[in-house]
Image 1 (cartoon, rainbow, N blue to C red):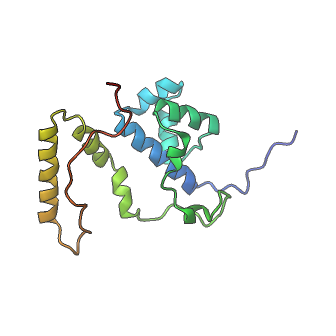
Image 2 (cartoon, rainbow, N blue to C red):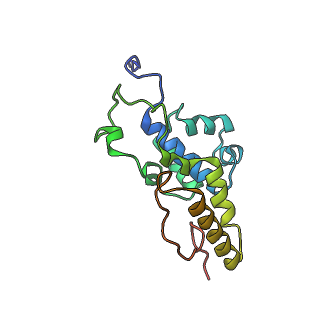
Image 3 (cartoon, rainbow, N blue to C red):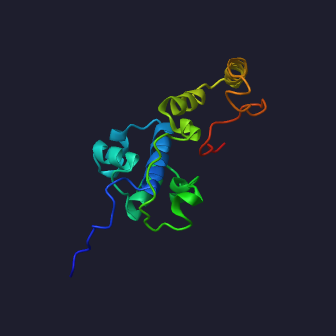
Length: 169
């Protein structure tokens, strides 16, 4: 049997691998799991989880399936939001696909502080306190940003239940 040559595979992380890794990190953080804890569930080291999250190592289909089970999401979750132009309509390798030098603003949703804020927001058990906090943040954001600085936020709404599986009544 002839071993496959990898001369044509670039040494930089593939954009799809980076996207999947970011989704992995986002879900892990939202669940409050450390890399160590997730690794232990799967029989991996935290370093391996770290490499998956930054896109340095590719995730096999069977491992992606196990990650989805551990993080309580379908495999498709890891590909949600994958821009079509990122793959050129297919998942074939392309030497043009490289990580952009400056991340787009949408990636601020994946920042650790954003994920920590969301996770801790839903830890507030009193709905009135949670609504008050939400209203305060919206008010501060409206007074701190000008129309030139940022697009207007969503209209005020009643905050609901945390995302994720609902408990049986």
